[in-house]
Image (cartoon, rainbow, N blue to C red):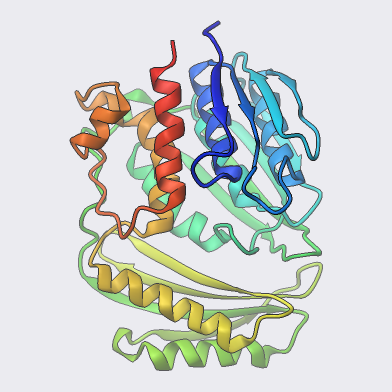
Length: 344
């Protein structure tokens, strides 16, 4: 087995992104890694239940040997084995993000020896994570453009703190024969229309109506359709989701309602994000950019006659992403990918 890749979790954005990316790459490459200072820049550093679920999920899929897989641990040693397709169930046990767990295991399962069915339970619409609609309507379509075959179904919404959200995935091994000759996200085409939707669970419908009204009124130039929906999750919750439909992509931008956050604040957050994206004139929304780097690297990059060295990828802009903005998560993913590609 290759020598261990050493990752300092206090570098870059200093959060869970480094761990998730390391897990995906470790399993996919068959390279062990050791991470220190896990989530060192967070108020409560170390592994939380959501991160622990990612560790144990990937470990189960690839038969890894693991040390340090416990809540609060700031060190993890991960030695992957062979990736096996199959039927898997992962329960975060809190309202930790289902979609972040899904984004960690999908690149691994695409390298499995057989199709997989995965059920993940936790939070589907929670702060600081991609909501279900973004995952299903923005992220997965880009993976499919790369030749990946992944299907996903939302069985139940889950909000903080009650959780109970359920997502089911079907992932097929990556078919090299279906790899596109080229992937790019530089031009999503003309704007075709959009919709702003307010969603509530066990709280007044008027909250969603107010959010939709504010977003729609402030973004009149986009002529957004308006919708309000009630769902029956395990506990109360709210989010405001806007879909901007272009010729070649759907951009999902959202805001999450919380106990101490007003409906006006939720709506204004959505408006600001949309204005920033539209004014940028770029095709790749900033949150999507960092989430595409791992699958791009594993399934597209080195097959387009580019150097295997990550720095060369960056220098020649090999990914062909017209990015709204390079976030700390994006540059952190660059850093982790560089560590794995340069390791022996």
